[in-house]
Amino acid sequence: MDRRPAVDDPRTRRHHHVAVATTERLRSLDVVRGIALIGVIALNYHAVLNEQDAFSPIDATFFSRLFNPVSGVLTTRFAATFVFVAGIGVTLMSSRLKPADIDGVHHLRLTLLRRGIFLLLVGYGLEWMWPGTILFYYGAYFILASVLVNRSTRIVVATAIVSVVAAAGLNLWRVSERFADNYTAWLDPASLDTPRNVALRLFVGYTHPVFPWLAFFLTGMVVARRFTGERMITRRHATVAAILVVGTFLLRDLIRPSLITDRAASLRASAVSLQPFDRGVLYVLSTLGIAILAVWSIERLVERHPNAKPVEVLSRAGRMSLTLYVAHILIFKLVVDVLGAVRPTGLDTALLLTLAVYLGGLVVAWFVLSRRSRGPVEWLYRMVGGR
Image (cartoon, rainbow, N blue to C red):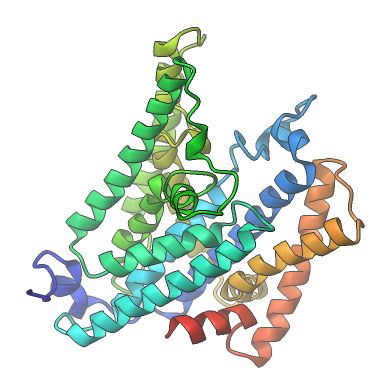
């Protein structure tokens, strides 16, 4: 079998033009992670602490709607940005290789596979105490990336499109089936006690399934293939992203029916939904646009203020984001479930707990990375997953 890179693989045509990423560029991605982390923690804490009051508040305020774990504007956007940046990171790893370096490509694919298995296993363990943890899904993204990392851009884009279309089509089928009294609950298993349930949760169920979340990861990979060492997200990227965001919201408002009384109206509403659990095409496009704009904005700020203290603080938090993510789960279980020190009294309590944990994490990251090159979970991740 011919193992040479595909002809239209940008690494075969452009690799020699790709400059080594500057410290500021890499720091900008770390800053993105550091900022996105607080959003992930806030939404997680609100959902798990306040449960039904978070999902269906009796007297909904502006902020309760904003932070609603199902329908809020902020929900999943921070996590999607993390996934998008992770895809960028995979391509940056591959950009170090020469086009004809067969052994290097094999080593990279093996590294991604090992890292994916590590994240999958750690995520599986966390699932039992923190259902829906994104680490579980991250494992699947990296395992699939190990197959796609040296494939042509056409194949990567096609895979992303299949991921989105499959998710949207499956959801429309489920909506249609409800009118036949078939609620397809088997697609959302409550536990991961069988291989079938594990596969369903990874690919179609719960919080961040491969269909359609793989599209965020693969888009990051594709965007980074055009990186020349100057700016990861160009003005053209940002312009397209802004058009996507505005266009999807306008299209949703134009097409969405005012009343949902039958199957056709329900299907139409679902098809143009921007809510994450409807897995619609417009949701993916709008969220992708938001992620690109977020990275673009933060990249510009880091470029203008590379030596600012907040940039360094957030950069260190981003470099230790895996450790801090795991820590926010363990701290919650200790403070809320074991000690009972925090009670579910509303969004304000969740945000105060978020702020305390996040600020504590910033301090810990600062001191740890002043003495070590990486955090403890990152160290384990590299040791098991390879470098």
